[in-house]
Image 1 (cartoon, helix red, strand yellow):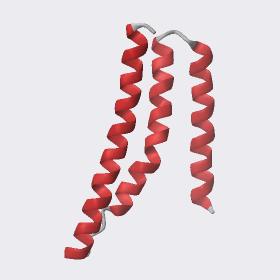
Image 2 (cartoon, one colour; image 1 turned 90 degrees about the vertical axis):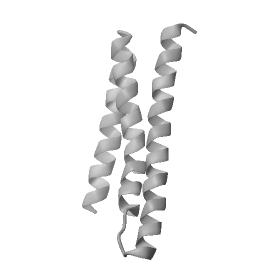
Image 3 (cartoon, helix red, strand yellow; image 1 turned 120 degrees about the vertical axis):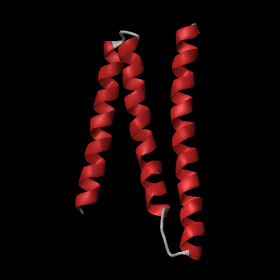
Image 4 (cartoon, helix red, strand yellow; image 1 turned 45 degrees about the horizontal axis):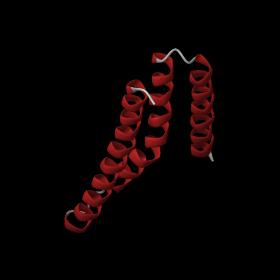
Amino acid sequence: MSRRDDAADRVLSLTLKAGAYTAFGLIVLGLFLQRIKGLSFSTAGLMVLLATPVIRIAVAGVQFLREHDLKYALVSLGVLAIVVLAYVLGIQT
């Protein structure tokens, strides 16, 4: 494994951690504020939780492009298109 691979792994790991911790924080804040004032941040937390895999796929695609690995960049783009299409079709029903 090269240093570049380690850096790419760290970026992807940070993306997942940031999404998970942000979603957790918003959900906990939403539950707390809902009891106190009737405000709800839980929906925002769930949206962040749903967006995290999409962001991870996009970051991976950018990393592959930076490494000039066109094959895996195109695979990432295809997977991203499928996930976004599933979200869009799921929202319409």
